[in-house]
Length: 114
Length: 110
Image (cartoon, rainbow over all chains, first blue to last red; front, side, top):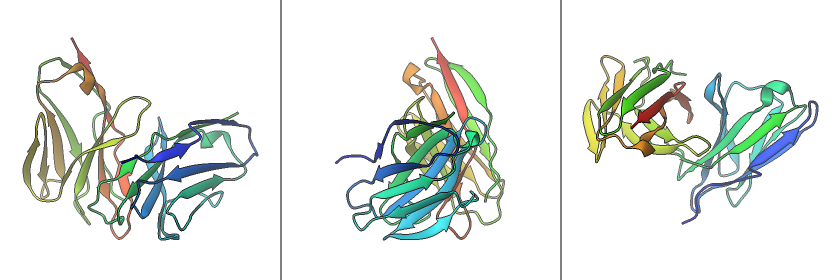
């Protein structure tokens, strides 16, 4: 079956703009998580959605938001972009999002903020 | 979340064995994951340990000691394709989120 799909693969934006990233989980997976990956900080948790509800949120400013649709697809939005938002944004899905479930990651969206 | 430490870089020779260590806080422990990430690609699941001991999966094995807050990933018969970053991660207490270590970049040389 198809894996986790993230679009777009690359994005270039300028400071102050906003951006929306998309994630389609594996069919049947209802939990979608988002992570930010940077060389300095590694992977950091942004938020997790299950059945259209945000169940968990990481320590990121309110400029970072997300949502999940009834078909489990998810989007994340970053408003008022800053240079420090340049990163690889990874989406991961799992069946139910329990702590012992392995995550299936997409290839990510590489965001560059100029 | 957890405080997870692992070495930044390691180098090993093709055909050899390498052990990648990971230490974590023992309070609120919910198991330990290992993921592999090739440059420019998605992380992929390798193992999950919640009980003490060694679990073997082909050339890869993962070990856990809960009392010591210690895990390692053992890679045998190294191949060039094993050159990648290896990420140690543990679920946060009380929420469905993983805290990752900074990753260990393994370079396999001929």
